[in-house]
Image (cartoon, rainbow, N blue to C red; front, side):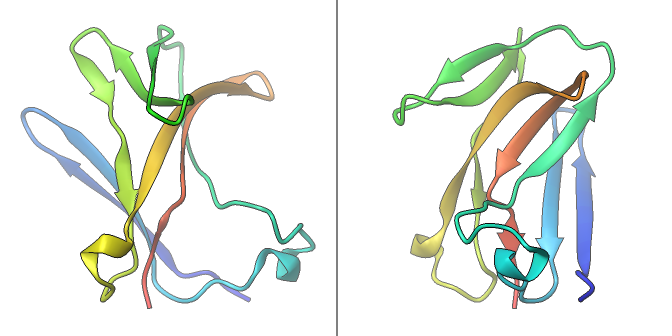
Length: 112
């Protein structure tokens, strides 16, 4: 089953935003041979970056990455056409995956 999605970047003089828009309903993780407890994660790779300060949110987990005055703040995930109250927070983490430095956020934006 093909997944149709867009990665949309918005660059202004003061910010850079990344949105992942999935254009159809995704099959459950079991379709891919994964556990039903699996989560969808968006990963952005960075090349030779300084390590950020990881600010901890009310959940006790890191959710904001800060490099001086620049940062990756908590985002939102939502289904288009749904009520605004149905949005979920997207926390940010900084990690090393197979020797590469990456920032990740979960969950992603879903559309019908």
